[in-house]
Image 1 (cartoon, rainbow, N blue to C red):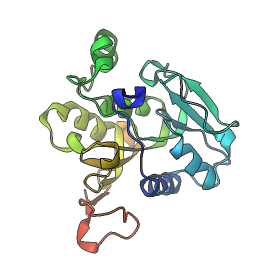
Image 2: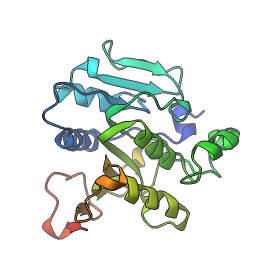
Image 3: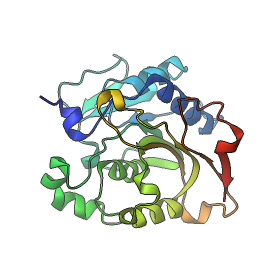
Amino acid sequence: MFSPQRSMGQYGTPQETVDYMVKSLLGYLDDGKQSYKILDPSTGDGIFLRSLIRSGVPPSSLVGLDIDPEIPSPHEEITFSHADFLREPNEEKYDAIIGNPPYKSKRQSTYLQENKDYLSKEFQSIGIHNMYSLFIYKGLQQLKRGGVLSMIVQDSFLSNVYYKRFRKYLLQHTEIKEIILAPRRLFHKGKADVRTAILTLIKKYPSDINPEHKMKLIDRLIDQNYFEPMDEQVQHLP
C-alpha cells in the first residue's frame, strides 16, 4: 500500500542534493539580517530542516508543513504543523522556502482532481498541470520581497508547452539564479524515474528585475557533484 507521500508524488531526497541546496540557499540570503524565517512546505522526513540546523540555522527560525497527519515534527523547536500548503493563507511571509514538492500531473493526481475548482481559481495565472508548479507559485506568494526559493522539481517546466504561462510568470516575477539539471534516476531507489532540476529563484517585483542579470545553468550531471561540475557543463545565460 502506498504511503500518503507516495500517493501525492513525494519521494525522499538524497542527502548530497539536500546539502547542496541548503548551502546554495543560505548563500543567497541577505548577510546583514540577524535572523531568518525559512519554510519547508512539504517536510516529509525532515531532511531539509535537519540539514539547515546542521548548517547553523536555529531551529526556532524554521517552519515545517506537511499534509500527512502521520508525519512527526523533525525537531521539537521547529514550528511544525499538519496543513495543506496550497490552501494556506498568504499573510505569512518567509525569507526563504526550500524543499522537494510532490510531482504529480493533473491526470495522475487525485488531489488535483478533488480540489479542481479551488485550484483553478487560485492558480489561474499559471494553470494547473502539476503539483510542483503550484508549490513554486504558492511559495513565491509567501516569500518576502527579495526572498529565496530553492526546490528540486521535474524539469518539464523548462520546455513543455503546457508550462508556457508558468515560465512567463517566473521571468516576470523572479531572478533565476540557478538551474541545475540533476542526475538521471536521482530518485530511482524510490521507484521515481523522473528527470529533475534544482531551481533557485529570488523573488522580485517586475520593476526590480535587472535585464542584465545572468543565471547559472549546469547541464545534466552524471552524479551529485554539484559543487565542482566540469567547466563545459556550466553556462551563464542572460
